Image 1 (cartoon, rainbow, N blue to C red):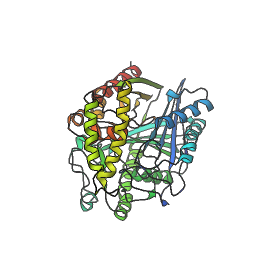
Image 2: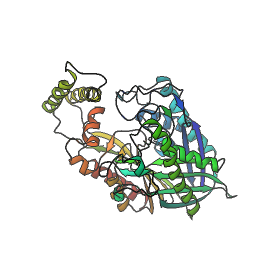
Image 3: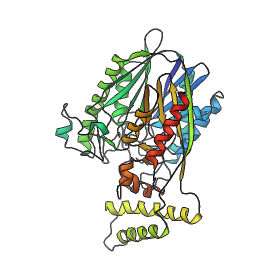
Image 4: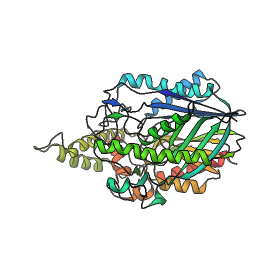
Length: 449
């Protein structure tokens, strides 16, 4: 088994607009607290190969991920784009990078232009750095970071969550363990490590203007400093309905809490690196499938026009203010609604086609899709796969919104299932819970037959 690791700096210049937390916040960076990076892992066993790249970004447009993968395939002709996964850590302390994501920061076009080449270089360098490695893995407790923001109490008081004994009330719908994989060379030197854990990287708040990778980025950098020459790759898991225990706090409180939460995560990673047991890797395989995800049909033209009247009633008041959160949010809704009306009137298919991916490295299996995946989908998938060590990856090769669980889909006016699609000019998914689980299980069966 050969593996290689590399990192490449993707920090933008200070002053760029930042994404996350809400629409039209006029939130621009003022300082670099921690460098942003694309960190990559490359795997080879026999003729099988794969590259996974994780970027310290909130999200990534599918076209940016596609271009990065195509650049790698051009520079490394032995690769096809389907053997490459580009994902993000989902830090909300990073630049806005989706040009058509109205309201969530203004993407800096020069940065967007150079970003795919920097991301690709991390993958190319990782492949060129590959060498023989021993692979070890462990699943270790990580109970003091996340909570389910839909089914648990979101944003508890700081005095509660900063106590080291704090734990989420609903651990069954929150990641309370993380998977840690280490790769050592023949001399026993740590060359790289991978960590899979699902939780929004939102310790810092909308009032924060510092660029950094939030708790996973800070923790990964701490471990890398302890092991000079190593590269850590954080793979964001099923974070669609999981927030960090510190969120929506004032700037100074957030920045102070960041080191505490990152410290907890770093301790879990160290625990995993210490406890990791050697595993045999006899193959590397990849697979993908193209899936058409169904959308609701109840949003017909009369229903959309009724939504438009409701939105206009908020925006067209004499006392409306652009400082009003409802005005800013409804501005985003109205922009998305116009896109929906145009799509509907065109007669085009309103379902959404996306690729779902799997990378198998011996008993390790990475299952990824371009959604913010909810925990119930992960739990059902993990319970049904054949792979001994399955890991779910959100936001792979772009972002197409949330993959809500069925309970969220059935809920009236659900944030993830209904309001986010309206903001983005997409029709809500009607059955993505079952469709995504089925797609993951089919790929798992293909790789483990």
